[in-house]
Length: 203
Image 1 (cartoon, one colour):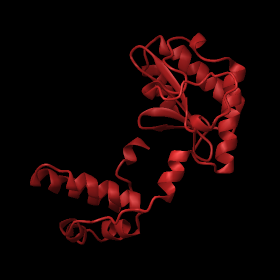
Image 2 (cartoon, rainbow, N blue to C red):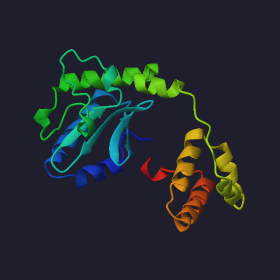
Image 3 (cartoon, helix red, strand yellow):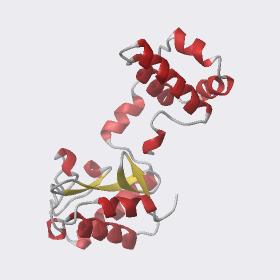
Image 4 (spheres, rainbow, N blue to C red):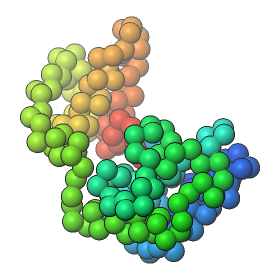
């Protein structure tokens, strides 16, 4: 993963005109704060990662958002965070650069977030998820039988993590018709044979 990602350039280029200076400001500020942060795109939005997600930005029709992956763990003496505002990220709806906290406050949050990832500290929700027992994954017999016709796919599927298996199984089981299920199994076999996860296009 590189420090800069041309997919982020493309995202900014396609953003509404009002959003471009906001996104460029956030991007420049993030990299100025730490050369450790690497750009990527997840779920269609730019992320800045270091040993996991640190922060992310997005643009919508009338506002932008900037958020921290572990916002609930950040020390916020200035009460700058607006946690719990859903799609509006960690600072509410941003229509202009001035809607963001000061550069110093943002840089402090970025450094805190990097330190949290460095320490491996998880949010309470992530801790609960990590300790919760996994339900047994029921793989339909028809899918297991189908994969046997694709040796590489069958082998890769057996070696896949629980979450990767679950994503494929859920996708196939949720098909409304036999034709859709058949097409999804064919696509799954192709992707699994290539070592791809169900949502590989968005990673």
